[in-house]
Image 1 (tube, rainbow over the protein chains, first blue to last red):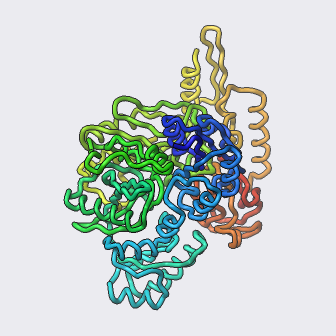
Image 2 (spheres, rainbow over the protein chains, first blue to last red; image 1 turned 135 degrees about the vertical axis):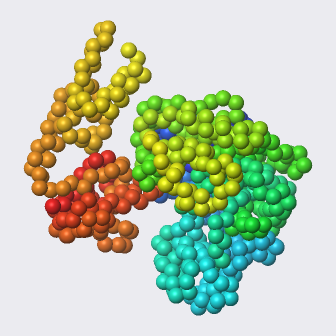
Length: 450
Length: 147
């Protein structure tokens, strides 16, 4: 096992990783930007190194500074968390060349899966069902020919994309040309690569993903699925496990996810994302890192995924079999963001003047907040994740409502009452929502006072 | 009186229509006074008990408002980074002496990875832009003035 690990991240995930390291007796090194001197992860780590100024590209995305911090402090491994450098193949490669273990898959796998068009091609050849569409990137002429063949509507997506950028829906053939160039332009601006590919648009699907763990010895296991259909602008808002989709379909998805991981010789924790519509599922992408919503899988399986990541990267074997992993009860996670849904989700950075965190059996709050902490405007608005675990979904919803009612974060506005409204919405309670839920119900969901 | 009670009193005062208030309890006396114009470039000042610095800040603000009575200030609704254009290679949304229409984007304030478009509250001419590209802004800070 590693003696010392550097955590190349900030916020709640850095805190979460440091805690898992401490439990395993691993020393930790935090990195921070000049405005994060008082951040919780800096205080919790055994050592902390300032790696640059506030803008992420000058600090948390500054590869050389982070690698230097690891070398200078004698860290043997780097955990990248999510966001920032977590899916940056060049960074993983840099770690590899400096003999620092990158806690995640190889740079080659990150690169292959990060190129969304290439990932689809790989999955198609591995026999995993994918949304009908182009094979790799397309030219305008190829796109026009393809829409004649497979029909409209279609989605134009950036090969290097993510987060909905460089994405365009085309419903009429006459609009294809302008949308094609608009997507290319947006992709070039956001990802410095203008390659786009085409996909048949599956309208209002459910978003279901399978958590994978794979060690260095070809053992690939799944930790069941998560339903992440409650989204706003392609950002997940609520995640839960298990999903309520048909059991035989779920089993097929587990098989497909394991097949996908094996096809690319995947190592460490990863997530295979699918969209589900009617009785079919299609691969959309593989996330080669820990995900924000990993706690719901931890709650139902009682497995600490971060600890497993550390063990796998240090060369240990997975100590359980697929049969020994049981799914128990129901877990729900809501993302607590410093934003005001009533004012069009306007960011709300500021100082938390009073903090009260809900507690009790089956309640978990993964967060970097503490009283008098100042939420910086420089980074993501997520300030915590409230997670509940109960015997079944109905009890989990009750527990979540009660926990949300107890949470106090004076000084900043959060989306806590917005997610509370979702917990009370009939469609959500019935478990019948798809990815269009928030956009269709937004007026009703923001009918509350902060 | 503990901090919690003090916070509650301040909060009640902030939410009330009172301009000032004096409270004596046991051996503690607190005096609270709201600035005549909420000046959020100093966000903490309307929370603390009255002191001479609040008076000064209020006065300065009042003076500048009097001088610019004909101008309409566009203020920052949130903390963040000011951007004059939609991208590094793009021209600024507006320049000084340019006419703008109500609802037209005049700048962007980036906060928490979200680009918040700031729009003109009324038709007019941009008289003065107070910010430089990439500069940090506070809530209610005057970004530009239109007339």
